[in-house]
Amino acid sequence: MNRTSFMPPERPWTSSRRVLFTDYDGVLHRGDAYRSANGIVSSHPSIKLFEYAHILAEAIAPYPDLELVLSTSWVKAIGFNRARDSLPFPELRHRVKGATYHTKFYDRPVWNQVPRGEQIRRYVDRHHLTTWLAIDDRDDGFGEAKSHLVHCDKNFGLGDTTTQQILKRSLSAVFGRR
Picture (cartoon, rainbow, N blue to C red):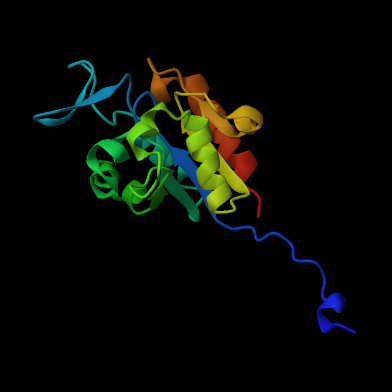
């Protein structure tokens, strides 16, 4: 008799990582940002880039093992290291463990046209994540995973108190139990 016939069927491997996919534009600051000769600039001179980063830092503070994965188009525009280092607080930068975009992807020339939810779901699948949440002003491509999204209005980002409350409740529901 074949010895392998007594082996239990393999179970799919899952990761114990706890990940918050984080967008910048329309989340950590209002509106969009653009690449210029002077670097990344806000879509309006009255808007300070990362004006709401402190809100994210405070919201995730109770979850020390929570990782950030950048789902922002900044990674494609200026590279992973510069995008990560653009975050104004070390407590955010130190949590960044990856990005949804990578230069090795076959579809990198059209990456910004891939629906954001699909970008995130690809990362989730590649890394076998089960415990994750996304915060973004885009809600395209999430499909059945829309319950994993904290959706921001791009005109208010995390400056909206209702969105802040939703984020805190979602973080607690997804990452508060171990």
